[in-house]
Length: 533
Image 1 (cartoon, rainbow, N blue to C red):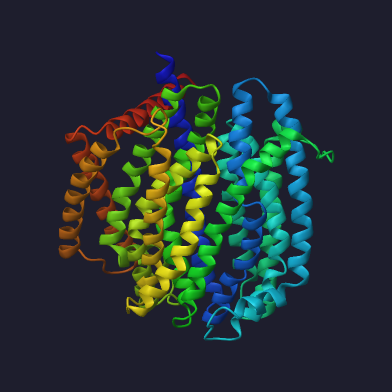
Image 2: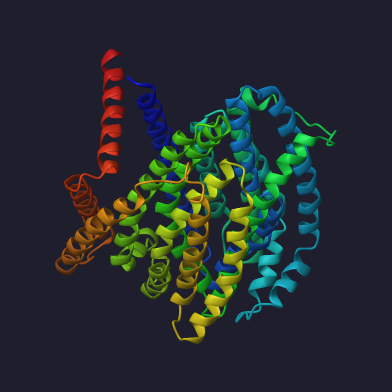
């Protein structure tokens, strides 16, 4: 077998492992949101719980955020590819020390001054229920320390991915979500005391998330120790690469806060419904796109550092097409069955009403195009990070930061209603996608290829799939008890997958045969191992 094929199989297997971890993580995350609706039955408490994360998450993204993974993983991978492991360990140790000091200072400030911070937040938002933000401020006192442990876990994540320890990094968030679910289920309730106990449980979950990765990755992690001699030229280069990524990551969080603030202008409970829609559209995005780019980024960084430009181009081409091959049909399926999707995921209890499902489904419909555009944005962002050109994603993020609130305001004034928020987000992603694609493709030796032909075939496949699902939905709508509803929904999903893959095979799409062959090979290997034991 050729080295290329071995590498391809390794890429596929790694992506599948990461994808499985993300599926479980997203599934447990959805269960977490369902438990929130059970335990916080008062809409005001439910919205307060959601908003309690806003400012701590903003602090996290402003200070470290995505910069940790998107800086450390490519940097370490590039250094490992050219045999400079010891030097990289020293630099990353200093990087960890510096960001830890900064986070300790700002987490302390956030905990002490949470009430003034949320009062300042209220000055810029038209909040229908004035009791929500004070509750959120109190609950956030235990979420500021949480982000310190989230940061440490992200540091472990970036290092372990550079060493290709994908299994640990893929399943650590599952443990975190399970512990968060337990905290919400045990401590959740309709008063401030229960809200505070819940966020305290989430703080403990974050601590265990870090310890899980550190202990299982101890062989690699023990090499990194505190280093306070920060006057280092190479460290300065790392920070120079990290700062644009840092700002880009904070733009994502700021946009989320902007959208939540607009959601506060609608009826009570809209923040929670918006969160539901946001969580659903990110399932295919996270499971497929993040899984693929998690494997792509260190590989691309190594190829670029070693000047293997053709391999780098082939890798991003394959990654882009593979990601879109999964997210395009997902977006169309969710668009056709948006209400059914929301009910299947969240309506497990009478506390989640049909009216709430309809509100969330309206938000979700506006997000459908974002599933596709965000895929392209994320792949290009990670590609830029891998080759060290971090300023371009920064410019794209700033563009999105400007467009998002303007688009929201225009949509609301035009009377678009609830869909204004998610539709504005989709429009924002289109502008970012165009900027990133045009800029990246200027480097022709690195540019992805075969995308236009792939998209044309994909349109045909999803058109047929959508037509079949629409007809089935007319004759077999969701009905009966929860088990029957889920059975009907699963049937429609299975038919959608079968039709899309069948059309893809008929049109001879490489992505269909690639993933089918990879799945067969993995299954055969597993069967062979079982037969020899």
